[in-house]
Length: 139
Length: 139
Length: 139
Image 1 (tube, each protein chain N blue to C red):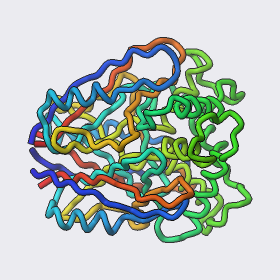
Image 2: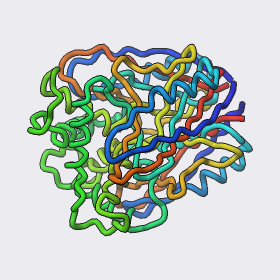
Image 3: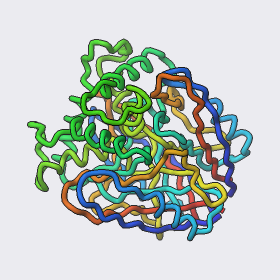
C-alpha cells in the first residue's frame, strides 16, 4: 500500500465549471497505484468540486443558472461581504456542493461512469489560482 | 492492508430513495476487512447517494417533496432537456446531494448511527439500472 | 499502513456551527500517521459536517440564515415532525450538506487552506451530544 500526494492548480476566469478529469488521471498514472482510491480536496471556501455530466454544455449552463438564482448576490440579510457581492454567495454555494470527493481506481483507471467528469466549480467572478489537493492510496 | 472492489446494481422504478445498507454490509463481510473504510461511488449524473433517517417513511416522503419543489421541472430558463423535463432537475438534485460517501468500518461493521441508512437517491422517473462502485480498504 | 479510529463528542447548544478542527488534528497527532487521509463521519441524521471560512463570524451567521430560509420549519406539506417543527428541516439541511468529509494528511498535518475550518453543523434547537467517527489511514 502506498500514499501519493500532489497538488493541482487551476486558473479560473470567473464563475463556472472547469474540468479536471484529465489532470487527475495523469496524477494517478504517475503514482502507479493500480487499485485504491483518489481523493480530491479543495483548499478554498469559495469554490468547490463536483462530478457532473461532461458531454452537453447546456447542462452546465443550466446548473450555473440554478445556483445563481438559488443563492442570489443581493440578499438583504447578508452581512459578510468585505470582498464584494459575490463573496457570501460563494461560501454558501461551496457548502451546498462539495469540498472533497473520493473516487475508485481499478487497474490504474478512475471508475467514472460514461457521462461523468470531475469539475472545479468556481463561485467568484474575479480570476483565481485554485489549489486542489490529491491523495492517491492503494497498491 | 487490502483493497476490495465491487459493484452494486440497483434497479429503480421512479424517483425516490432505495436503501442499500444491507448490500454494502454484505460486501464488507465478503471482503473480510475488519478495520478501515468503505467508499460508495455513484457512476451516474442523474442519481446520487445520501445517508438518511431509515426508520420513518414520512421523513423520506418529505425529503422528496422538498427536492421536487426546490428544483422544479418547468424552470423557464432550462435549455438542457433532450431526455425530458426530469433530465436537468436530476443533474441539479445530484449536485446538491452526493456522488461519494466514505464510511468507517470497525470489527467488520460499518459504524452507522442508530437511525442512519444508506440510500440511492433516484432523480429520474423512468426505471433505471444504477451502478454503485464500492471500495473497501483496510486490514 | 495503519488504520486509527476514534470518536469525537461535540456538545451542541442549539443550531449553528461548532468548530472541530483542533480536535481532529489532535487525533491525527495521537495516531502518528504522517501521510494519508482523515475521514470524519457524522453518526446522526439531524446534523452534518462542513468545511467553512473560519475567520469571520459574519460568514457563519449569513450561512445559518440562508439555511433557515431555504428550509423553513413551517412548510405546510411536512408530515414528519414527531420531534417538533425543527425535526424535518434538520434532515433536509443534513442532506444538503455532508455526512462525511475526507482530508489529506502530509507530514502529520491536515492540508487545510488558509481560511478553512472543519465544523459540525447542528440543525436542532435542543442541546445534543453529537458523535463524529474519525478514521485516519496512512503510514
